[in-house]
Image (cartoon, rainbow, N blue to C red; front, side, top):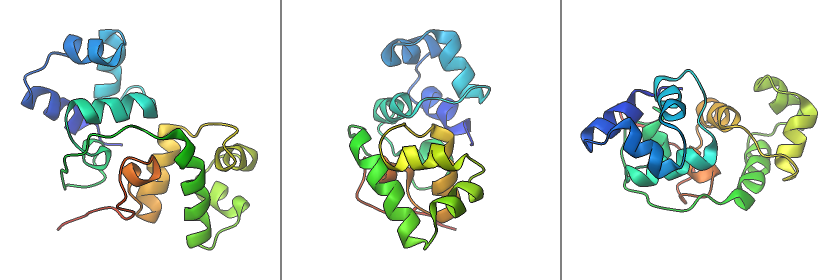
Length: 150
């Protein structure tokens, strides 16, 4: 994942790391680790961060150069439905998609069935590998495919 935009957006708004961390209800060091990419930001916090910066997650994590103003709640119930939909649209079995993503078959099955929550990295890899919008997967947008301009 590309986290350069997180720092860029924070500086664009002239926010300190402490200010953003407080808005996210985390320690400054935790936010700093997310911003420099040494730790992965949880999906719920990533959605909140995108709201703070008034942008789409796809832009914020470098999946798309297109910045859109999206202020939306993250919908955890939609994620499992969308994971299953993507797998079916791509004509993949549970085993095939889990192998493509290098995650355990049972873990992905639980993600799809809403028993376990997928990691930010799992959703990022699905978005990157199959061209689906991270914002769409997480229910923040109705635009299914990544917006990419050359």
